[in-house]
Image: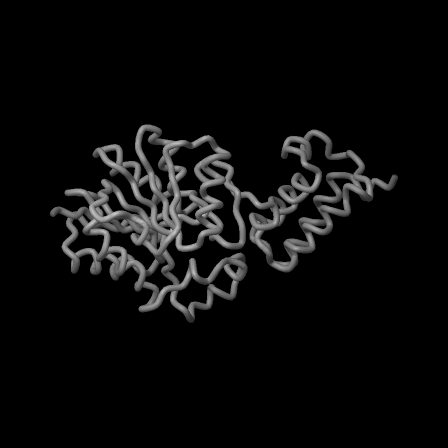
Length: 284
């Protein structure tokens, strides 16, 4: 068989194609897709670079590669994305978990470890934030809510798959599924916060993600304002509310918190040194 079908050469060809198509991580994309097609770990590619691939092995890889070349996110193609070292099932009904959101988890853990009480994740999607928090605090109850029933079911599957038993997921609009009087020590959310006419919506992976999980009215602040307002009745005394938001929304979000009576309001940057998380404490 021709050496052109070796693992190494197959990866090189795919990497070049992906680079030309505009992928930000062409070599990583090629490796992840080939591993998925072969059902092998990454170590296989490094251990057996000279291994010849059969036509039967190449065909599924070429099909996956063709999808990526159209811009479809790798996470949707393989159906999985790692977040907080947790392998999560993903689908086009939910946002793809991103590394920047781990900053929100870090800050939420910092507040949660300093107090007692349950934790709420609004707009939970895959359950990434809720499951990360639940995995670090196995004795605490974590509740995740999503508007889409498909997302609620997906998050529940992820919890079961990861054997995380202290997280539960409900379907409904923001606080709607909760009983009156329910209290949380910490409420976190990565809500829709992109403006409807933002040019980023037509670029990269975002093109394939659900608009309902991305876009909000009022310059992207409508859902943040709604949650900040209604969280006050569901936060325990001195409870914390934390949001992920856009890089240019820190000041606006701090103003919303302050208007609604929150204290100790502060914005934190992500790993790229952009404003990304704003938090505040509510005293009753």
